Amino acid sequence: MILRRLLAYGEQPSGLPNKSGGKLATPRTRQDMEGWHGWDQYAPFYDWENARTVGRRDISFWQDLAKECGGPVLELGCGTGRVSLPLARTLGEVVGIDRSPTMLRRAQRRLRRAGLAHRLRLVRGDIRVLPFPSSSWFRLVMAPYGVLQSLLRDRDLRDALASVRTVLQPGGMFAIDLVPELSRWREYDRRVTLRGRRGGATRISLVESVRQDPSRNLTIFDQEFIERRGQTRSSHRFSLVFRTLSVSQMTGRLRRVGFRIEQVAGDYQRGGWHPEADTCVILARRDS
Image (tube, rainbow, N blue to C red; front, side, top):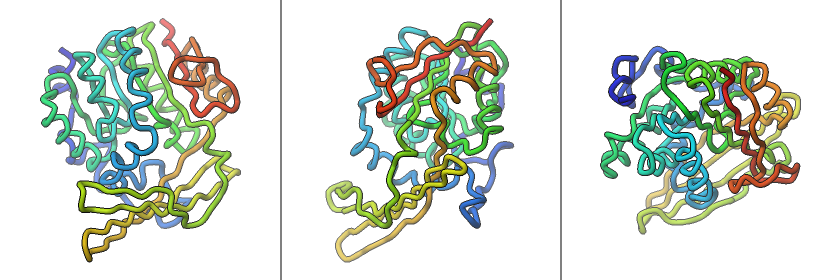
């Protein structure tokens, strides 16, 4: 099984450094930022926020696609397991890879509670250099919810696409979910965008600022999560940065590294793409 064979290819328990990670540096300026900066700090709030935004509206799409393609399946940027865990209930062989040890620790706890450790393997690694053997395992590689938009330079995206092609079986599917409207977000400063409770006693507010860097096609989200429990108040600040590419730019880059575009959809029901769509799903196959 793929989950057993992973042990022979340098799989790291979540939370431990490996050759593509180690202690994560804090950027000194926005110019220094990498797409993976901020995600360790985001981990305690990721599930809370996503339950109020994207929720589960994309889950059935990924489950249906996995059934269609068959396993094994690899999810890029699996985070806390929002997609990987439901997928593991559907399909027997799933691998999730993420760079953030903090995200992976949360995914590991959810995995143990769900009793799915025999169906889902979590790996810490860099999606630009996937730590799996060539052309022998995956029938489907998934990049849900804009994960490729955390690659802020063209060379990073090129490396990731080439690495995905390497680990896909010939004819295997690469499915990409992009958030196309990021570059259209208006800038604002310190706006309360979410409020709610966690665990009954803890109240959380998200205070957010949005900045655009059109010269680099980047959207920067400065986040402050404020927790209140009784008279205790704590604040957690970090930034997340995403890059926007047009559909033609992304499909062109896929073709250049050896993918054939099968479909471009504008929703999770595989409806046609249009410029005002809230999402963009690209399905591409690896050429033989």
